[in-house]
Image (cartoon, helix red, strand yellow):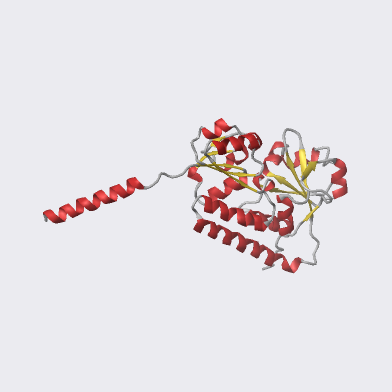
Length: 283
């Protein structure tokens, strides 16, 4: 009995030692809503020590570090996290270099608005935080959701695609419109819509002339922008939009206007439902 008790004590000590030897959970910092969204979707949200302001709604418990383009090295280093995952908008470059010289691992991701780039980013973020299996599951779920939407839209090839004008606020009173090679442009195409603005890449200021020329059927607007201008009625009163009538408003969460993340499939599904609603009685 004494020998058995001794074995039990030894096993308990070994177990305690093994637990003590386990490394602490690594904290990290993310900059860019798509990166933050990916970390949260991978189940690592509690590890976030700090995020940029645009990511704050996705990680309310994390410290806010300010606008992603004007980070402070002191503010980032004060959090004691050894890893920074950021989109290419993060900066300034001098601060990122200072972080590297201080021993912090800084990983920058290109913000390419394509399905394949989004998938690669998801898997690489998962690898960096040791969540590979969760990353594979998320990537598979994304592929399957996009495939479902594509299958549903296949019979509509000959039908008219609604012309969609995607606008968002950038600063107080500044409305921008999204052109080609943007996250929104990709979402529109995948959801069976047509970007009403053509001939430029990126974003530019919204003007009444551009709205008249675009002649949109639908306005796609971030949820926060609709609230800021006073709802749909407020949108209709804006000088840049007042000349165009008979459009309807579709809203989308703000982050989808900045970059494509793991919820891209959900955004495409939502837009496809809005652009091509199922007719009553249809299966």
